[in-house]
Image 1 (cartoon, rainbow, N blue to C red):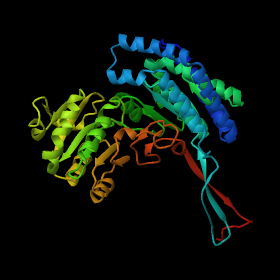
Image 2 (cartoon, one colour):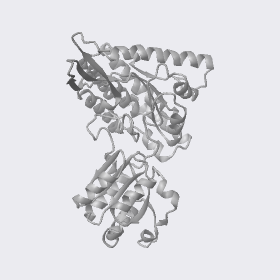
Image 3 (tube, rainbow, N blue to C red):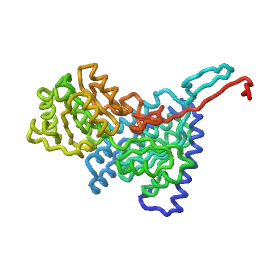
Image 4 (cartoon, rainbow, N blue to C red):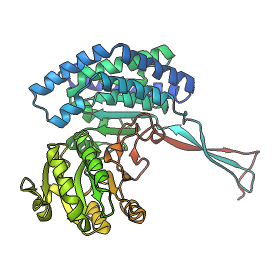
Length: 428
């Protein structure tokens, strides 16, 4: 994979070839049997495990370069692989293989008075382009989900994860080859030249059906701004946890600590804690002390600052911020309705949670909050396709059109109408 800028003619030729091969592969995948697709996934999982040491060695090169470039802690965490994370990728491939094949399934069927039988049948989207930074696991997850859903995919990994992504991609390619499927069903753009991203977005509308970005705000803003094809993705993961007056204090502390600190660099990490005014005397201090003791910086309103001198004053910008770090903003609100209003104003429609033992209050929160994922008495870090039983995910969509929430196999499909008759003609 070249790290050097390419000439425009050379880049044009390379990208056009990728697109043409993807279209041909998509036609084959759309007709491939479940057994064939699953065989490719299972063989790729075998190879991931067999080559774990090689993948980790490639990842070490990426981590060394990341340290030299002084990448943030969040980006480095997303980039880092270990034996457990390689195993998780392999398990993800096997989980996707275990899912039902969505292609060809009949979503609904009805018969018209004139005898026409109409079916809505699930079909692939076609060719996807997935552009990502720092996350080498996206190579495996995206390849698996696209293959299972009958789509060809062009992967464009960032320079941060180039060595890791290439090693993982090789396992997918060999899995396809072993199953007798076109190896061009999952292609990795063989250059980190940023011009390749512009080309994917602006010059390949005739071959690419959907673009999915995975990365920082800058990348996603660029994709949404420049793409000439539909985009599935989210801009920010400004997630909230609201602790209600009827919450169990021990549960609240456990959920908040996990939501914020399990992995601070993922989009499902909580960035703001909202606490019911009626729970200040019972809940606020234990929550703040637990966060501080765990090494989390707390930025709060005046009521929160009064709890502990180590709490820094929160600014208006803090309520909008996706920290992706061990920092949390804390605000006291006058009950569930004000919590919902705060989320509506400052949130990014990603993932929000309420902690309460009051079922009525919980249902009010779950119905009022208009985010892709809402949870009751559970950590926001469950915002993940694997945790939803989807095997894996390409990302979390905050869109309302086509796909919302974890983007798994079914979300990478569309449908067509199949109409069967016995010679009916439409009267004039």
